[in-house]
Length: 270
Length: 114
Image: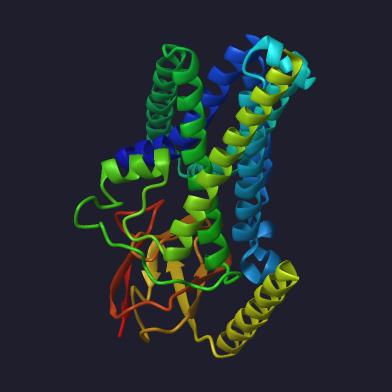
């Protein structure tokens, strides 16, 4: 029970920690502000508690597929917010750029806070449902709580490492790493949303694109961690692969257009 | 003009896809699985190959469970004393294991696609 709770919570925490550390590094770069993250995580946890407590009702919506529809909506919203964050990040990388673009200094932190809040609402609810479910069984609850804190601790540590890893990079490298990681995160979100919609029978099933379960099983620890970080699936459906690609391309194109617009406005003002 | 032709083609595809989904939905077999004392009943389910199936999972335990099947890419939380619907397939013949992620040591089962 201890190990399974460590892994379950670690998986959810890693997903959130990656996004938080990326956006935190970006906001530190843009405005030297970090306090937003406390409100965003707090708000996200509050929403996830509401979602966890109401999961029984939500599940009954749309002929018992409400959970899938709500999750997919959250994932698509997070993706769109990441795209807007990417635009603001690339377009307003330096103070002069931000001034030229007319961005308020708090714009990025507000967007980042909304993104983190929505992402944590979904991921946090799963952990809370798990913990609330074990609460009545005192012995098990104790073990599960200890396991959850270990998982949470490891997840946060990895997030801190990612944050300092990104902060250690310089200039263009730093910006490109942030954009690439945001693109992978967005790919994972859209891929998971397509899976949810397929599970609810809103989009048709497609054949499996590849089977790498013999190389790296999704059930192995490495497989689970890779799933949390980049959305690794051993047997993804073709629709899922297409959705992943769409999520990645959305962010990359947003970054390319933002950087072109930024360059044009600079040359126009010179 | 060219754009209009593209949009028309896209709409035609959507309609075809919609019709396809509806005709399949009308004949979707429903399979019931119960969760009792952190065990699945039945723990082995036979499902026809290349057919979409609706799993109706009824959790009789007061505690929540998470249905998870890695090979089928399925994952869903089911609250205590409630039911959930999960669509699977169409998939090829084979054995597709599933677990209850909250009680993975006891809640285990397999979907046999034939």
